[in-house]
Image (cartoon, rainbow, N blue to C red; front, side, top):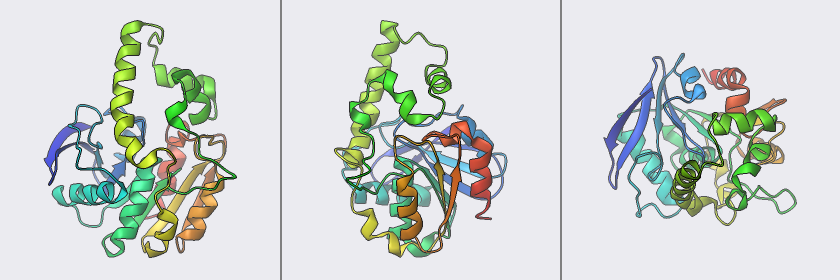
Length: 258
């Protein structure tokens, strides 16, 4: 995947691009995305993939003008327009799924295909979404992966998590990224999406890992019920990072959109 830059109204946006086929825009979760992401590479085998970084992620500039859910939504549409795309397949994971759903609700006639992967955006007091802002690094694997041990190995990628230099870089990067994500995810990841989902006209597939402890599978049914005609694909032995644990199955589910 190549890292490029496109100018939008408020800020230059860094984005990853690669592959060939129908245009697909991927919106990443709170953990960000990199050019080495295996899910992007799998998508790029069948699609022309564009994966914009939310301002503040990677080496992209921060953007104080993006303050709330409406700002995130309109900014993301600005990126699609700046890239010259018309009716791309829109795919969002976690926080990116929340933004993608808001985009589909705000401009329902501009989007015909939508894939939401373990999206945030709904809330029920009896089934709370995990508070990622209070989790320590060593706690993350058990919330993100079905196989926590394998997930820990993926997250650390062989790096010494006790090395002060690694920890300093990790904490600074994490604080920068979550500072941006917190504008729509903190204190709870809910900004009224449930009241707007009825506006979504796009053919929608909702994908969920059965072992998701970050955003419980309970919410899969809320999205299926809230979006007319939505198809739910539940994937066993996968957690919130189903895009890593069951990459091929997620890509196949997206393929149902045509």
